[in-house]
Image (tube, rainbow, N blue to C red; front, top):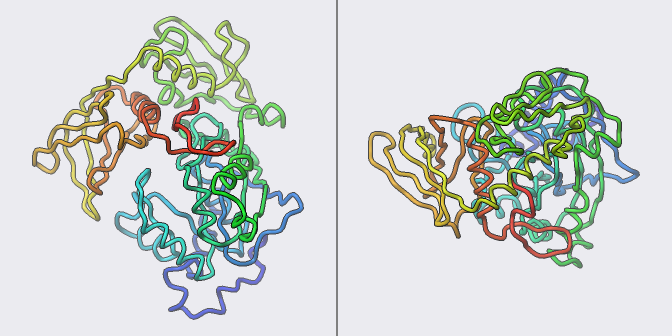
Length: 418
């Protein structure tokens, strides 16, 4: 949609627009995003003969990359939509003011917050649209995760149309583990628009099933089917920060990526990625990155556990304060624990296995959790690749939080992890 189309927000007073998507900051953000994405990614919005609602709606999509919301916001302009976003970005400074200024709703990752639901309801009652990634996290395999089991209930509660969008190509454009973009066209497909009257007649599980079916995606299969290619070098740069052990011999932190080859320093395994990100034929039978990650899951489960421990530096985010410290982090069958010091004071805490919903992580950097409403980032002092291992086990240990097609909540790891 072209930015030149009439923007209805201009007819409202400046005071009434403040703190909502109708804020004058919203088009500024869209223009800034367009400039940032130029040369990095292009989007093609496909309506498939469907029409977007003119009024408030809940937009949901799969979550293959960090640019998903921004791409959608630009594509559906002049309609305005704000996300339910990671509370981490609301800590302080100009970014906090900007996000709150356009009505973005902060949410602690994997934490139950009734206030978020109420803010969402007020947002749609005010005539504004919301965006939510129901998987709750960004894909690391190019495949769709199970969705949060409460997504269907949330969609019904809002009482607005549910707009289901699927992104294809966004993961390979910039996966979580690769440090750079490779420009390609990302297809943004409008899959369903379900009116609120129809949602009311459906059970939450039925809504979940429609969402799962609508956003289902496999990036590697799609790349092969569509003939999408990435004629670049260093296609696998950063991958050892996700694939933290050799999927052939099991050696920890032994993988290196050079040009388009992944090589194990322990057993000599070599995998070469082609232009469509498929591996050349190899004696191990690995087809793509998703296969490697699933091999890690299977090996970890076979070996039992977890029994992880490492020395870390830590950052604690308490409201607008940021404090640092160090200590030892552990993860075992009883749950996650930390013992050390923060801000010059001794600190120890534990999160039981039954309460541990996930250990979100950034590849090769940190893993994180909340304790008593404070957010903690843990940075291993050695082998930062292991952050992915903590994240994988956090998923494997989590309770039944997610929903799969067919209805009902199932374990988070239906063979997948964050």
